[in-house]
Length: 344
Image (cartoon, rainbow, N blue to C red; front, side, top):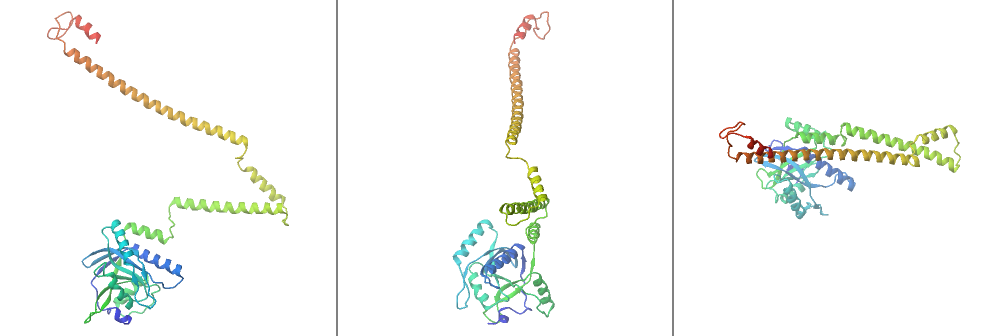
């Protein structure tokens, strides 16, 4: 079976609307680059599963995960490790319950009969598994029709082609039909891709400050190493010419360094440290005393209010007295009533 007989003619359209997110592109590229460098081959074999959602004829590819396969020596189709694939699918299902396995990916310049034979292995996970083919180095191919030119322009930006398995016209053989796709990115994905394209170097002020500090420390370390090597060469007397001006500069530099190991410095440092700690303790003690004072004031206020309520209740329970020299209502409020009120 030739390559031309594997893919349906370009005049045949799929009718499938596919959206590809940046994360699968990055995952596939990283998988391909890592395996190529590990095995030192230009076009290694890799295989993985596509995760996404499908609603009718609308497909959205959101994520991927790698799969394991055994490659026979006779050149036949690779055999998937279905135990590993099922375990990985269940793990992703626990984290992303809305995503399903909708296809698979691999690397090849063009679809081959081996890819057609592998479609049946992925049919156990999805009814119609899509094939996302990474085609490294695909550029400069002459196209004839406008549709093919449009596809070629898309491929020049992304060397990825999406295929859908289908039955050939008038035959029962499985063939592939090319599917147009669009790259769909959210705001978070756009920020992540921009950050990755810059090599993980953010443009924030904090990162720039840390990088400048790192370069300064590296330069200081290099210059200190030069000074140490010069002094060691003088001590070893290996023929290095003694320059007294340089030695005086080194002595001045050493003298300008803080005497961190001097006894007087250590005593003064400990005394200052103790003073700072004592000030902190006094501040904490003052805050604690203020809080305790507030609690006592609130407790006193509540206690006096309860006593006033009890005193008012006892006064309200007494019968009015006789009319006397005082004032009142009913029976009046005489001097004996004043005496009783003062006791309460």
